[in-house]
Amino acid sequence: MIINHPLLGPRDSAEFTYMGDAKLIDRPDWQAPEALAQFIDYGYMRDNPDGAHRELWYHEQGDRSFLVVTRDTTTHEIFAVELARDVARSRGQSR
Amino acid sequence: MRYSALRVIKEALTGHKGWTPAWRDVAPQAHYDYIVIGGGGHGLATAYYLARDHGAKKVAVLEKGWIGGGNVGRNTTIIRSNYLLDGNEPFYEHSLKLWEGLEQDLNYNAMVSQRGILNLIHSDAQRDAFTRRGNAMILNGADADLLSTQTIQKRYPFINVDNARFPIKGGLAQHRGGTVRHDAVAWGYARAADQLGVDIIQNCEVTGFRIQGGTCLGVETSRGYIAGGKIAACVAGSSGRLMSKAGMRLPIESHVLQAFVSEGLKPVLPGVITFGAGHFYCSQSDKGGLVFGGDIDGYNSYAQRGNLPVVEDVCEGAMAIFPMLGRVRLLRMWGGIMDMSMDGSPIIDRTHIDGLYFNGGWCYGGFKATPASGWCYAHLLARDTPHEFAKAYRFDRFEKGQMIDEKGVGNNPQLH
Ligand SMILES: Cc1cc2nc3c(=O)[nH]c(=O)nc-3n(C[C@H](O)[C@H](O)[C@H](O)COP(=O)(O)OP(=O)(O)OC[C@H]3O[C@@H](n4cnc5c(N)ncnc54)[C@H](O)[C@@H]3O)c2cc1C
Image (cartoon, rainbow over all chains, first blue to last red; front, side, top):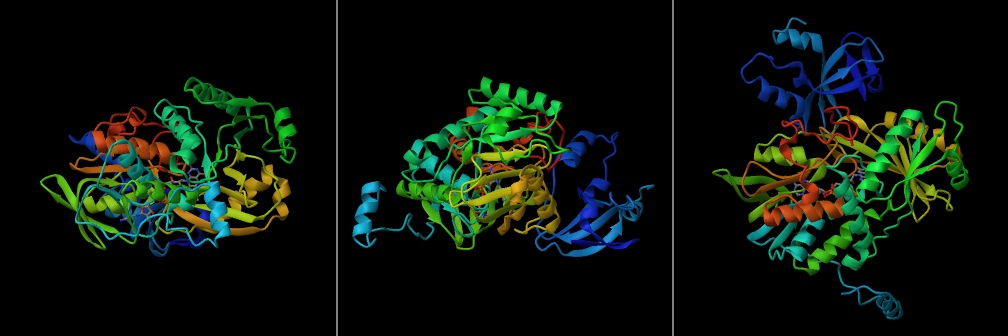
């Protein structure tokens, strides 16, 4: 698989480490009243869809950025690649 | 029809005209007491033990494709019971005992071959861990044998014990482990279940569940609605996709695992050998091909094919311990979809929906579990209480902090 890195251009997926569902960006607030249930969900439960999946890839053998890749889990086709930083910021996080 | 040597001789002399299909091809009925979704090894074993041991009369197995087309016909066929933890070891040891009597039970030659499995050790820390595991196995009534480097070199002269990076410091052997012809397991269970009246319905995909007031009443399928008393999901790698139709999320990710077979060779490899420094396991089939595999590709996938980086990684593992394989040509490679659970251990449990049960999370070690999985799932379905050997395989173990985490590395959907 080739991942089209927003800064570096097309890179071999073997340079990356797969980190799972991009929902892991939304780490629950540990002080929220439902924090326990939220963390159980965050730590263990997954949507695991067939079809388009937003997921985190870490460019470990490259510039060490995290990417959010939208990929079809039935064909391995990649539709979009974003910097995880940009995605997190657009969701109101500081970084 | 009973199979026997006499029968084979008789058929040979009469032009093989007397053989009948191993199971009936039936159309689905409107209602069953038990509907098992998924005609893999686990689903077929479940139906067989339901009918044989629990007197279940109206049982159906619904398979979206054909019997044996899933992981049961794609795996590297290794059976063993070399686990560490109490939640696992009695279950897998029960499974190994069932394998030992399987062919007589089913009247089917599944080519169960207890040629032994050897896990290689490459460091002192690994020797400590394997010694502990061996002791846990013995405490649970399994067999385990710690071999020295000298013994290994004598028994397997082709192994490179002096690899500069991964010298071999010994090995943990389970002599009762081995291999089984995988698709014969599916066929054998299918035939035996059919003889007990189980309807095996192929080309019948479950597309939805009919759930009313918190109770599952039946399933929508590509061959129409089928009502059921108890519905038993058993679809391995498709667990996420299927259970989402009942509105459930699971502690499971689906990943692809590849396997490989080489051209046929004269006998070169006695037993199953696993590399302890990388991820590589290998045995030789009775036809002569070397059957081997390694790690999952490592990203969510429902595509039954993998990518090249893992092929390279597996072949490097092979070369590290068996330099003799350098000139061997690869014949075929393929992939299967694994239900990777968050602690590497399976789930056999009720769901929060009445009448709907779940069996999955087998990661890539579920073939060896086939008999015990069917045995314990049938018990749960018939009696609504977990079987003694599967009582740790609960959904709520994650939230309760009772993960069955063989490696002790915490939650991660890439364990097995
Ligand atoms: C490459 C590879 C190597 C492996 N090596 C080993 C090994 O050496 N040792 C070991 O112990 N294990 C091994 N495994 C794991 C083992 O094969 C699986 O854990 C086990 O086979 C899963 O159970 P099953 O046989 O019931 O699955 P499957 O055979 O996959 O059965 C599930 C069935 O459900 C059907 N299905 C899915 N969705 C639906 C639906 N909606 N409606 C109806 N039917 C449906 C599928 O078509 C399939 O036939 C390996 C797996 C792979 C892929």
